[in-house]
Structure formats: C-alpha cells, structure tokens
Length: 124
Image 1 (cartoon, rainbow, N blue to C red):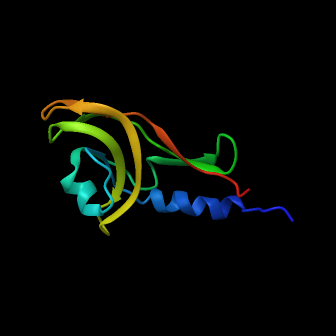
Image 2: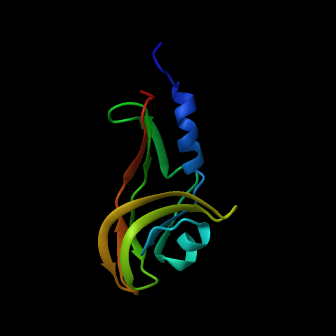
Image 3: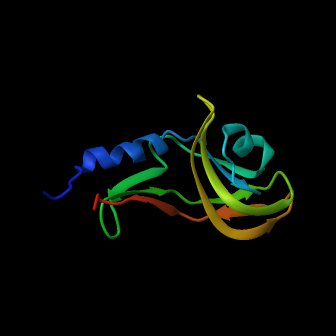
C-alpha cells in the first residue's frame, strides 16, 4: 500500500512556522529561543504572523511555506551571519532554523533577507 499525507496534515508544519513574529540573522546555529533572540542575534526583522508566510504546493512534492523578504533591516551587532531563525516572542519559542550564505555584518549597517522556502515533502 502506498503512503499518503493530505495537504492539511503537511500544512500543520507551515501553521507552526507562520506563528513566528521575528526573523533573526544569527552568528551560529541557535538551539534555543534565547540563543536565537540574544546570544547569536545580529539583526532581526519583525514578521507579521499569518501574513508574511505563504502556503503552496512544494516544488517537487508535498507543501511549502514561503517566508517573505525583508529589506533594509538594521544590524544591531557586528558578526558573521551563518543562520536564520524564526522565533515567536509571545511564547518564547524557536520555531525554525536554517543556514544562510555566510555574510559579514557590521553594526549600524543594514541587511536584506531574501524570500525563502521551507518544504515538507510527501511521504515516500
């Protein structure tokens, strides 16, 4: 028998992510809310819950959520960004972490976050 997961089930991952109200450029991989929000934080952009996230079919299978671009984000701390985290400040949750192209950031400058996807594939 083939494996199957309806879109509604796969969208639960996206529903969790789209409750994030902040996107943070981090100098290392955070594993906790505090690390993403403070310890490794270099720059952060406010995200609008349920608005800055778009659900759609995945590029190859399953479903994806596209995280909106944020441009001209102020850099608060000098360092090299290696990860991007999505966090929820209301419940102090680290909701998603991904790598990014390593980029040196300087306090007082700005950084752009391009749009990016999180994909959940169909079961195989």
